[in-house]
Amino acid sequence: MFYDTFWALALGFALSGAVQAFVSRRAMQRSLGDHRPGTVVKASFFGMVSSSCSYAASALGKSLFARGADFTASMTFMFASTNLVLELGVVLWLLIGWQFAVAEFVGGAVMIALLALVLPRAVPTALLEQARERLTGGTSAGVEAADDNEAAEAGSATRLRSRAGWSDAAGYAISDLSMLRKELVIGFVVAGLASVAVPVWVWQALFLTGSGWLSGVENVIVGPVLAFLSFVCSVGNVPLGAALWKGGISFGGVVAFIFADLLALPLVLIYRKFYGTRLAVRLSLVFWAVMSVAGLITEGLFRLLSLIPGHRPKASIATIHLGWNYTTVLNVVALVAFGYLYWLYRNRDRLGGGAGLAKDVVCGMQVRAQDAPARARHAGHDYYFCSDRCHDRFLAAPETFLNQNPGQGRDSGSGDRQALETDTPAPGLDPVCGMTVDPDSAAARAEHHGATYFFCSTGCRDAFIADPAAFTAAQSSR
Image 1 (cartoon, helix red, strand yellow):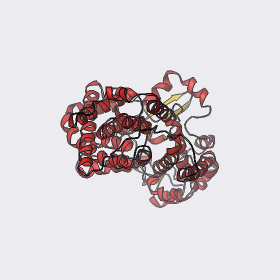
Image 2 (cartoon, rainbow, N blue to C red):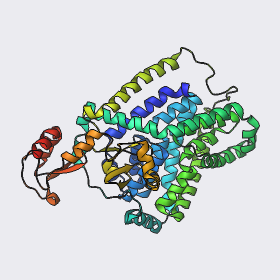
Image 3 (cartoon, helix red, strand yellow):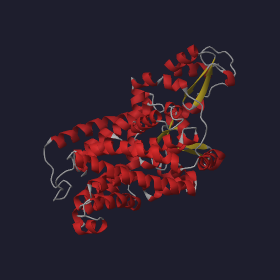
Image 4 (cartoon, helix red, strand yellow):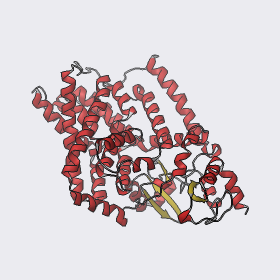
């Protein structure tokens, strides 16, 4: 299986890293203030281009909600960031067939439409207000109301053309791969064993087969339950979905199972911690319902259009032997391209990347320090995390993770940490013209190496963004 999908995974991680490096999360947050159809479409798009693992997606959804985004829009973002993503579709195509790749996007759209319709009616406003108060009242370590960083957004186009920007994109890609390595290994190993060693009758005992529409209904209901128990999420769900398809589960049942990566038991416990028990229970039941109904509707549409595959793989879905074919060529190209990404990642301090970025010392995910869903201070250093789950694991045994990842603190590179210590802006001093400004009424501001700089005008800010090193060096000599 891994041989068949390596190039697709490499492509997906590379594109995901680029989007995370160049798309502003501030713009997402400002656009998701309600759950009208247009906002739901925006949330879906932002989620698609912010593809991430299920744990990080749940943390991002929580952060958006805590910072003012509508709850339904935040949950739509979370759904799209794990289910409407390119790498998932390509791996589905390669392992099961193009019909399942198309079903991912068709069914995903159906599922999000159902979520936008049902969730606002299933969750009372009072319960949402309690959940927001729970998040913003200090019980969650990573919730802070961050100021808009307009200067960083203005510099996105410049970063897109720089090697520093692409080295940051490489950092996201490599760290995402590191973060998901366990899920991927578990998914491929379990699916391989399930495909080769588990008899078909075992799957038939789990799922009702041969009973027409009744089988379809039962399969879409049980599929998410299996996902809840499997503990496998994100792309790791796809190989197991392929094994289920071989074992006899219905088309809609496979679709519902793939969508249910956000219902794995550890994630349900995370929802409980984020939003409280009552909202977590309602949320999980709504998720289960829309995933199952979306799977059933998708199967109905594909059956109507005669797009459901007419046969299932008889042999193992894993590759038995390697050969020189188009898959080998794509894997070689992907290996070379990913090797270049890794070189960018290893040399990003020299290339000027890494400003304002940190690496989660628990899972290895790269995060923007300013946007990190959780943070902690230990032994005089700030540490940033992709989710409260990683934050809590760190607090339980900080030395364990610091010994495994020596030198990882506020930023992901030592050069950036030194810059944070030496490039501290003088309070109220414009680093370009030297004018004294009041931070509360400054005409503009910008972030550089984790520090905030204030300016008397947007002209000074733009000059700073064009060459920050020149002005920080000049300021330190004043």
